[in-house]
Image 1 (tube, helix red, strand yellow):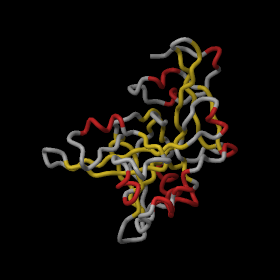
Image 2 (image 1 turned 60 degrees about the horizontal axis):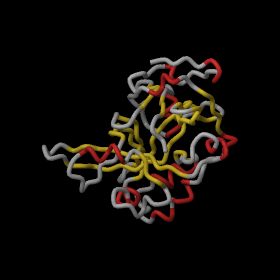
Image 3 (image 1 turned 135 degrees about the horizontal axis):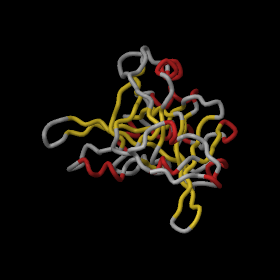
Length: 232
């Protein structure tokens, strides 16, 4: 799964990497957690341009009675998303990019203990999770946009830590994934293969990242496992 990640790249780098017309308004975030507002990129349906916006992390299907379902839908399995009631409509019509430059996973390190690791690109560049988005009309008639991150089987770098990983899109697949004219999920499934592990790197980080209220550079700083401080 993917339950925590970071997006700290400068706005001009995000603009250039994702082919945006303007610098997106996004402050550096080191510890993004479910239910928070996250950055997303969609393809404009009538014009050849990409749209940056923020959405709530945790997809709320249009048929949901309340927003609480979003706690359970922060991730969607790429193998079954096209069939699941919560995701199948979005898989056909509302695919998006979710920009990041690192994500965290936890590995058991002892009884009741888990060691967090950060994963990112070997060159430190930003990248995109494959995402799905949805619009939900709340009882008060307010519209809430939300999203989920698709997951896939782990590559060899992630396998040692977790049995799933976020589906990271190759930049050359961005156009295909975002294309609003493609309604058959089978045409985009190959985009969701595990990313080549040689393009990635990982390192252990402090347990400071365990708490969502901690949102600073120390959450992603590399540490030696033997000397990790318990920071809260």
